[in-house]
Length: 107
Length: 385
Image 1 (cartoon, rainbow over the protein chains, first blue to last red):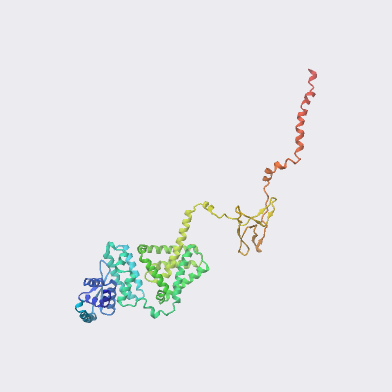
Image 2 (cartoon, each protein chain N blue to C red):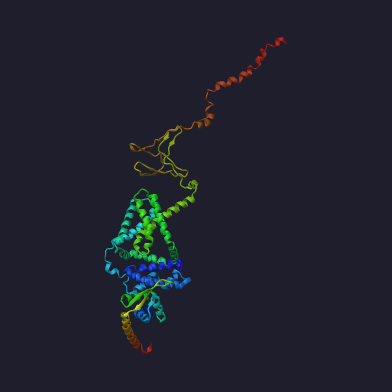
């Protein structure tokens, strides 16, 4: 099964989740997602998702100058973001539960 | 990160920015802050193994990267923007695009011809100027031009070209771009000063030269500057070819000796034929050793060729205070046939029958022999001895 199709629907949730404990800049977020097992996630998709969540008012951002490279824009969850994470997390869990039940022992 | 890497990363980012160009400028800036830093970081991680090809391998083409980002960010895809505005008349957009293409070609051609201006050149030049003013004044025109099917075909072709092996070559050439921008301005300036010195066109060409300096770096991010940059490049390349061509021909043919290898023998404009008495002949048809008529073109008073024939002499075209006249047949000069030829060839035939010299010779020979003994008989010495 093509995981990229699955990812499309849950990338928002995944990005919000990896930002819950610690702020991060784009590449950070990408690394955390990959370390968490979502290695099929595309670089550009993560950046696009960050922009969308930011434009939706779920993230705030701040710039940290870097001495060795370009400065980095960090993203952090704000209150609406945390609320969204909770809601979406619940939705996902019940969805995953439902699918697990459907699959039963067969999978 | 060395400058070469920098230039290639910059190129990647520029292409990416292009693919996002229809989004609001602030949004593009934000994206480029994020994703631009990402591209740079990925390039740095590659270290020694960095190449534009490797970068593209890892991240996809700049265009693909931008498309994926757009999709994830929920921006409308550039094709979707078509729908609301697609019905608008695109005559102006089309005019602007094709004026750019024609202007570039024309600039190249007139650069190569050293700035010869004809009516058509002037017309295309005016169109190109009008198109430039249009794209700069009408901000809505650029997206319209980008949506033209011919623009899509053009950019598609260019993109395909950029993905092959040429990608590396292009990337390395890009390092020299600032040098080219300067050289381009100088080349165009030289045309303005040499070819159009006293014509108003000189100002136009000079302006193009100066603007091309600005247009080079600007066109990377603002496509409108292409309307100046591309014709400038065309003109400069044309001039460059002209200069190289004349240099090459000077090197190739240092002496006029090579001109004699011309397989087509040069024919005079007219031929006058005289008979042995020096009387001009008319209506003579000339042929070479192969029986081919020796034909030359002839231009009458109306300036048009009468076609080629081999009947000589041709009417003479005379321009004087009465206008232009065609004088048939008669040569504009008389000839005296050279006399030395007569004396060397004629004597054996002509002196023998002539009687003028004959009387002097016959008496001379018999006289001395007949009279020789006479003095001895007359000598008065004998009676004394």
